[in-house]
Image (cartoon, rainbow, N blue to C red; front, top):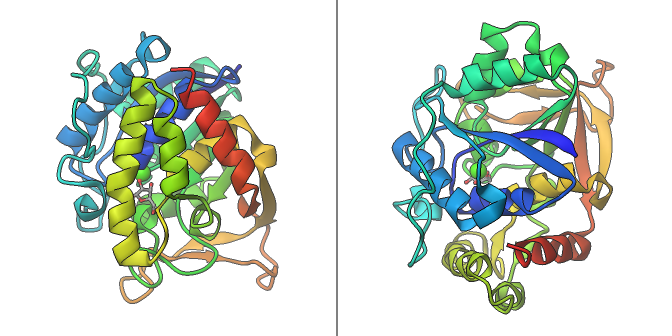
Length: 310
Ligand code: BDR
Ligand code: CA
């Protein structure tokens, strides 16, 4: 199986993404590194422990590590209005499986990638602060990772500002470091994730699995649907982070286009925008493969099948 480190900010869709990943035999999760983001670091760390407990056997023995509690330069932003004050709005959640390790997330990333050169995929579903710290501390790292797969950005507009997607806005400077690092990179942005919506029919299917993981996913996505209906007028919440996980497990579920992507780090209307050169007009070499299409039904079938095994 593919060696993977998960990095994120649970956050309800991070939690669903991690359940999908932990349940998938195609990948081996070496550890989980946690960042600030949807809610503050103490809560995202706790929610990681809870998610591992929810995964049962599949989460046993997976270590987790606290990382950055704030962006590199920008002001801290949160998405508690989308994910609830705790980040995991569900009842009857288990206690964290165990406490986090004491090693810093960035140190774990460095140590693990150096131990397995060209073999480790970093699946990032939050602000990129931990990855940027690791890349600065160990300048050889971008060349040693197999790939970075990131849920973030968009080829079109944003969801947190008209220009910026949340994970990009939550640490634009970190995203800039990662996108200029030379690491192999795939970006799964809003232009595809907004096509993958957990509507009432899908929520019912998750609940119908009859296991605890399915029930908790259904409960989380019900809360999320309420927010999305009001804010974005969709029939449910967008499965952003689970789609990025699927991009690691089953890359064929998406269509990819190589292009130059730059992050706007000047403050102003476009702060945090992922500027995607869709038509190659800059004539700059591509630094990322960007998801430009998705097979939504097949993606959801994968999610349902895998959560059903937990
Ligand atoms: C991203 O922002 C967060 O709120 C979600 O967890 C996802 O990673 C979507 O813009
Ligand atoms: Ca996230």
